[in-house]
Length: 262
Image 1 (cartoon, helix red, strand yellow):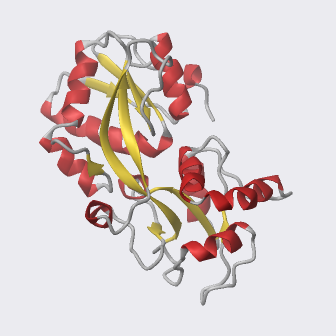
Image 2 (cartoon, helix red, strand yellow):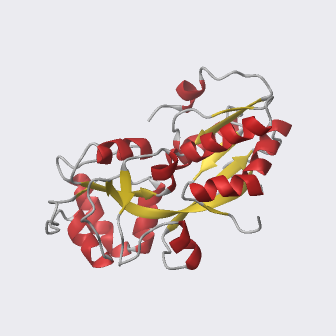
């Protein structure tokens, strides 16, 4: 993963430029928001570098190198003194696979075998789990939902030759290039980045915004924008726009259910 300093090295330091950085699962959404925002506010500038993760967003806010943090959770006490978290939407957490695999569906009972590399093949062939680091927000949430999977996931990470992707973009690249890898992560970037990937039905439910909104699908993760204690007027204006009705339509169209109250 690129460091925050490297990612932001080429960014202008002009006060009117909003520097937004953080988790890979939210990058494409925020870039789309920034493009729409600039069309409506031609003098505004919003730059979004490559993923630095939620932890990188926290460090950047604390140091002043980031104006808007893009996070998969709210700020924790003591992370950024006086900082504010603004949830903008929540997206399903899904298993996803190459778009050419229409034969794969999973149930929660299949998951131990999936991570134990013993799941029977589907009509289109075998599937293998792509793992993420222990710090990944999606995998943290997965083990909160299914705590019994923890030993299998730990053993799979420890296994020689295990498939491991560091960032959300790495994971999507790997699954697009494979006929058998299946990964777990946020749904929104599959749409926002126009990936050749599909969400795998889980327990008979097709994961999407509509299923999340109706309660038929309950596995999700928030996309949160965070501000430091004394943000610039430009940073405040962009975050306010991200919670506007115009932004809500864009978020929904790209797989993220807008936060309540809009």
